[in-house]
Amino acid sequence: MSAKIIDGKRLAAHLADSIKSEVLQWVTDGHRAPGLAVVIVGDDPASQVYVSKKIKMCEQVGISSSLHRFPAQLDQQELIGLIDQLNQDPKIDGILVQLPLPGAINEEQVTEHIDPSKDVDGLHPYNLGRLAAQSPLLRPCTPRGVMTLLESIDIALVGAHAVVVGASNLVGRPMALELLQARCTVTICHSRTQNLPQQVEQADILVVAVGKAGLIKGEWIKPGAVVIDVGTNRADGGRLVGDVEFDTARHRAAWITPVPGGVGPMTVITLMQNTLQAARNP
Ligand code: GUN
Image 1 (cartoon, rainbow, N blue to C red):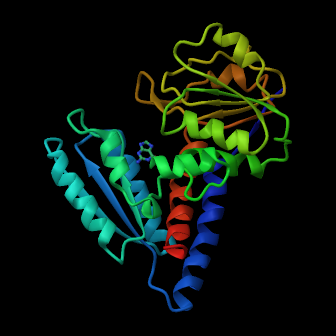
Image 2: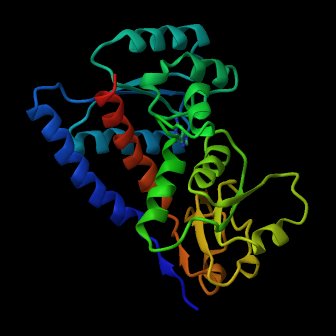
């Protein structure tokens, strides 16, 4: 078997066109353009790349963006002060604080300070709680983007066994809630899971979000499975690779996402969808 590729880059480009039309219609209807504030602290190279992609995509779809850049030594109270200002600013519909934050800053306290109605990352406990309680409002970008990818291929989600590897607040946990909401049977694996290969072998749908190159071996994949690789790791020589051994997994899976060009572009485009959603429902 040779898996079909789930082309996130192409789907995101297609969605960018429709979001651009929706934003234009919103403005034509007499509203101001949606406004997104992006906050980055420190100089983590991967975060710099992600943030510049987010700002560029705002320009492409007609969302007005502002970038707030700070050195790694920023005091947490200063960051909270900025978030207070952005929470009060009527021109700002969405606030995104790029993660990870430097070690001296408490990510939980910062995230919880964002007004939930402007939390376009969907990471505030209120928004995570809404998702857990089956009435989602703003949904975390990467998991929502993965659901959009799964909906774009013709597979049954109801009753499928979904295995999520990775239990982070950013991806793994909300991913499991999304799949549960789609009526999959969901298993969550993490660093203390015993017999990871046996868990992965059960997966009709496998989502991996750990951040370890080649963690999931191709021979663990159930023949015919759908494999979604959220990992983005630098291999020797600088090449980007996922958490799944792509070259072996593609001979067992029915569908697989590439790295790069799979989940990454979906995270960015979902942020645009969430920002438009936040603008429509202040
Ligand atoms: N770092 C990596 N992915 C993300 C994301 O989706 N949102 C934020 N805020 N930080 C990230």
